[in-house]
Length: 153
Length: 99
Image (cartoon, rainbow over all chains, first blue to last red; front, side):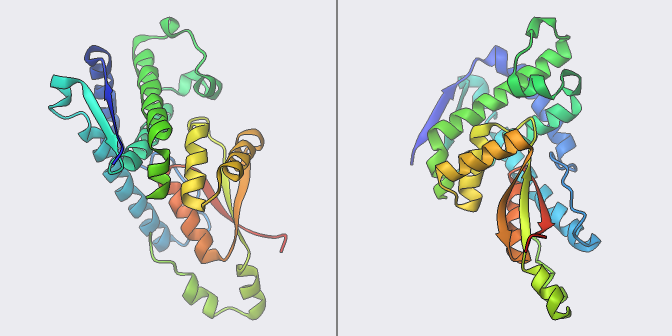
């Protein structure tokens, strides 16, 4: 099985994990991307959202498990066919929630282009934006190296 | 995914309504967060598109704000919408009024 290991800088990534953990508490009960389900009756909508939430929480646990005790000794995270799919989805969930809760002030154009003077941002927004970019990098790495594994699974 | 209730509903409908039920669109809407490469991968994974078709629909979403990615029976359309939403794309179900 193809496996990708990434060595991360602990001083850079550790503060971002605080944000990810805070968001994960919110996301236990909230869908990262609110969906328009007008065409479904109420009971069915409840079951639909419940299953989406269950899957979302399972994905988030996969991503959080990358940053367990070993990560803080080695600074290494690893992706393979077993965890690539839930992790790439979890990154999206966190990025959507970051936009909603921490990055609204930046505007969508900045989020799409990534073009902004980071040093001009206030500390909490800069940290949230760095987290947003970090999660995008994780996604890009997975898609670049494990795309065929995910599509074929 | 949640069990579809379209069977029982469809059974009780008049023939004309059943015919209408046959055409449902799965529409994906643009968002500023998802990476283009991610959307292409999801289209390939969920809808079985090849690279060219996946990129075409991704660009349609990006440039026009929406793309109809699938048309067919309601039950299958619901399944596609649910799976696309599991991947955090904004996907909606619409009746296919062109049919």
